[in-house]
Length: 617
Image 1 (cartoon, helix red, strand yellow):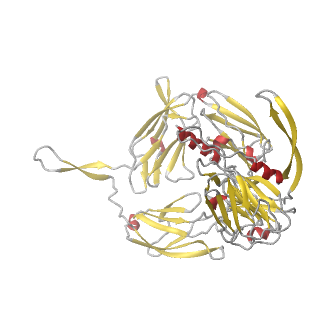
Image 2 (cartoon, helix red, strand yellow):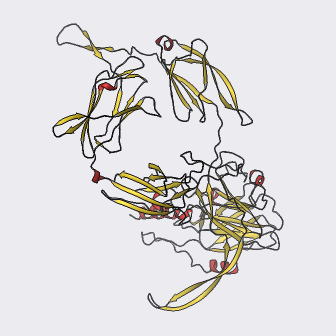
Image 3 (tube, helix red, strand yellow):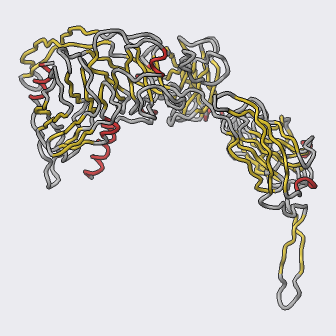
């Protein structure tokens, strides 16, 4: 510790940036002295003063400054001139090492250069505890570094400690997700991360993001040597001498943070914006639909139901015009509801649904007025109103693509004999077979598939009145021409994977970390065909329960979130390329896997450098 203090005191003083636009001051403030002294023992005072070599300020002190042991009452910390004043409001614990970790909150007043990773320590007893542990906190689902979360230690090894008592030592993660917990006494600990929303330093809300390590940690220290080199000039070495220092372990802890599946199920709202449809919106997903019973109408076979996969948004399209013309629909709705004990119990609500807007004269025709020249009388013409259909047919279609049709209301009849798909052969258009099916997730979407031929020209024709909507409207005729991409416009990526579970799947990703494609791992391979040239990342999920999606963890059940791994490079296949990539998912630690270009959480120093470069222009 003495060496650390001497090293701090030997820092050169900060230079002031030139007012004429010259070189920027890039030297951080230097710690000079404090009361009580740095690392002093037998301290009883709760008010402290830290002095620096230049005028300083504190940036986001409430977010960055962390005190161990955690303080129940928020301490008073302020900067004035060259000094920082600290007033601890909690009673000091006996024989305890206190650390005030400023992270990079202390900056010079001129250019904002941070004094990074500065921690002030003292002890109320005879001994100053100096052990440290280090690591990285990552988002479990996508390995993003997490900034600003608490990471804490418990000497109490019971599971209940994390959910009932404050941490004994804490730190906060920086912009790279890194943390260092200091001032630790020898012993055995459990380590956790916590998004401490209620600031009580323990896990008390299901909505708080958490992480935990399955094993205990035992802080240790060892003496290491590193070689310092003095150069005579830029090429010639003058002297090499060994330098001994204390290194603390473990220094490579990886914590994977997650939010538990928690739900408070209730009916958020109901609405009937138009007479022919009403909707229910629930707070969380459900395994089944609610039970609806009409009180002033017969609900049997009265609706076409449109729902999303989570069953938390449900639309009821009314079939019978006599029913939807009623001003008010009275009904009872029975669904599962979360009670005060956090248990799902049946609940029945009685609802009166009043239409905000009447269904218009949505018939086969509407009136259109036109005025003739001169003084002729106004006459009325009839204009046909068609069922609105959005035909999504890309002009340059992928060989794995499809044509799709989306409607504004449920479809009751679709005459596929009036849908014609043709391929141009020489100068002739030949009809080709296709598969036509309703989309599995959207009842008002229909998809057309076939085995497309590379570089061929196609035409899709939908005759007039091919589709009939729930309320009697028919579609207009549609003709779409398109072409399938050439085979040499595509690239392929083939992964040879080591270390994955048999139930794993791989997601091909855009540089923005969005899923482009997903395939299951088969016999240690994951193959992606017919890719457009561009940049791609890849993420592997060890799908433990085999449900085809990443699943979160649960602390009470001692269940970690499913493992996620990233291919450590962005791939950029060109047209007509095949890339074969070997991928050992355990080949590097999790904090080194995700490519920097894909990370949304950028290091603060990069942001400051970018801002400074912008200001210099």
